View (cartoon, rainbow, N blue to C red):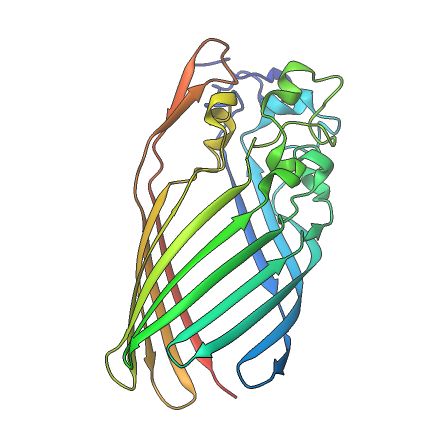
Length: 296
């Protein structure tokens, strides 16, 4: 509807989108992590490793004009094009093989502290989008030479990053005291989350390995605390299944591929944008990965 946007100063008489901005609504976040690793053998059956997490992020947001008046940097909230930020963290890991048929592993990654997105420091709490600390535990069992079964869990501490853990209503209920971009500004209201995964790999031939896996974890969103509105930009399905392969083209070259399917599920809760209303989301997510590797 003409003139239905929430920021006429920026949108003029344009129709409002779902979050009362104008034009297309969404964001694009790309993340690259380079992790050069140094490892040591401890005896014949275990080892440890450490890797710096050299991280780059590229981000773009559009259609969020309605949030600009609520920000401490109103001109750095939306439609700024792509912006880059860099950061650093550390991961340490442990691996052991107490028996030929059993492998164990554990890893811990610190929070990766990212620099501010200069073009969007009025959108994220603290102006940046840090990668939360996380840890993983896993085991792998080989019941036959050609079969490998694995089980692992991963815990991600989303709530420790203000941009992820702060409440959705922080700014909406107190835009003066908690403006967007401040340390207490609105976030995605995510809780710490644990994901469980199991996978099976079968060596079909010396050159071909087939894989299948399944993952389950509770959504980090706290749906009962007005999370649905903002999390329409970042949906989190509950269950995922995947299949993949590795084809060894030669002794040094290999092609890897994987297809992932997130099972659609609906989550709903009270609206942050319209008091008294409720909202629901049913995300549909598919993933595709292709990798070429060379062994030196």
